[in-house]
Length: 72
Image 1 (cartoon, rainbow, N blue to C red):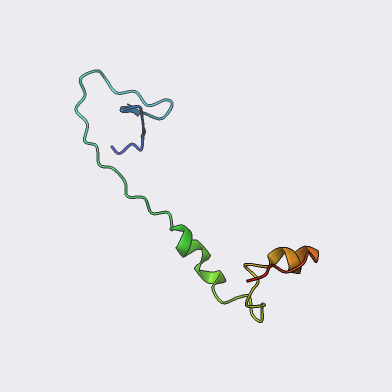
Image 2: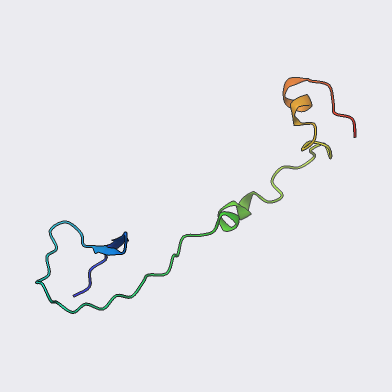
C-alpha cells in the first residue's frame, strides 16, 4: 500500500480517512519537487518582445505615462 502524506511541524499528516494502527512501521521516502523553476516557466517568453527602446528599463514611466525621461 502507498499513501501520500504531508509533514507539518515534524509530524506526518495522513490524508483524511486513512488510519494506521499504533506501532505500525512505515517507510518514508520524500518525493522530489518536480515543479518547474520560475526560469523554466518563463523561458518561452525570452525574445518575444521585439523593437523595444534600449532605455525601457530606466525610462518605463516615460513610455507608459509620458513623464520626462531620466538623465543618465
